[in-house]
Image 1 (cartoon, rainbow, N blue to C red):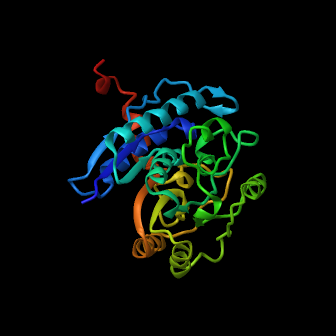
Image 2 (spheres, rainbow, N blue to C red):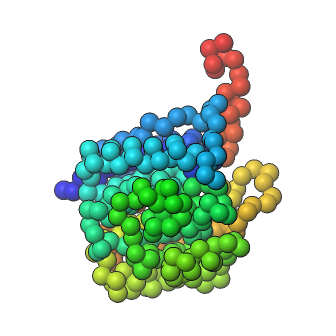
Length: 286
């Protein structure tokens, strides 16, 4: 039996929001994994009282470089055949996908299930989680792209659930040479996804699942359901949880999933309730 590693990365710096830290911890408890799967949690600093410094136009860039190198060291020591990564934000896919690309080579494809393309650059954005796919393709943030050992080809990426782009994203996608289809009205069918896998000969696939690809009307524990927020800098997801399950089933039928990331879990009510209790002296032993 191939060894699978559950890797918990409660990163908050790449999204510059402390809520990602708690979201990863809670998702780690909820993720349905077999008891015989080893779990490793990356020891990251609790965001309480921390400053996320802006460096080269990126929040927390130096800390994120150190984080990437730490994850690489962990994976080399564990040597897993498969990885289930629990975030945090989307940035947590960078090292596991890079590591598995080194292990499986060009027979490995990426299916990026996300509302956003994650190919931003420091010239027009300042959070690393929106650059992670660009980094894996040798673009994005130049400093974090240098940390990718095994860069992917744009033809090895299929994006599912992509919504209308921001002003700067089309040019970034064109520069990378990444093909895409906006899916605000018509989603790709499961047959189209399976055909893409077969046409490219991908024997194994990586799946990046950003929970904000889901419609906030269908799934509330995500970025676009923040209480009292009325404006967001980008389009929200339109996929239902049922559609996501159908995609995952179709992908699994067409190829072997060796890497799965579940990212951007934000259970706002729980996070805010914990924040409320944390202000009480009695729970802080004071």
